[in-house]
Image (cartoon, rainbow over all chains, first blue to last red; front, side):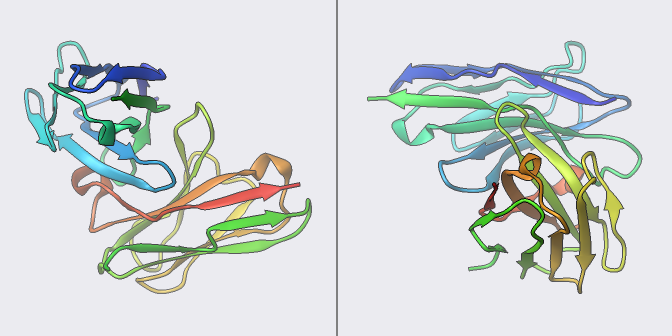
Length: 113
Length: 114
């Protein structure tokens, strides 16, 4: 079945460091790919998405490119801030209805001043 | 503010008790979902309702029932709570297809079953 694998962390970075969180997927057909972010004590928020190969999703300085050849959707940010401390979830949706989304286990990020 | 509202935010149940988690959205979304979140396992889909009047099982439906009361409201019921149902429960909604438009999530219900 469809699945998402991502580095589980925790990841600890200093402020202004470069961030990469790896995500790979297994899916039939042509899935849509997402990154969601969960700040402490809150629900998940959609961060960015890409719906076809080579698309780049971007938001709030974060970027991810849909790489079909490597089945990957790695999240990157050039300079992280303390306010980026959160749990990041890679996710996909596929199938004929695209009604459901499958999530990875999440990666916890802590940014220290 | 527009969004997804879940009640209650916290609940402690004894094994065997029943309860209903409430969810309402005011964005006129067609689809609604219930997920549970457990450490190291991400989110797992319990039940979903693609449109008003329909409900379908997700990955982990055992021990749960749902009701799509109207377009706005989608409730999750635990008939006989078990310790394995201790989790954080999230309701989400989507305008149409979650896989195209993405979800809007509520803030969650933290449930402990003792």
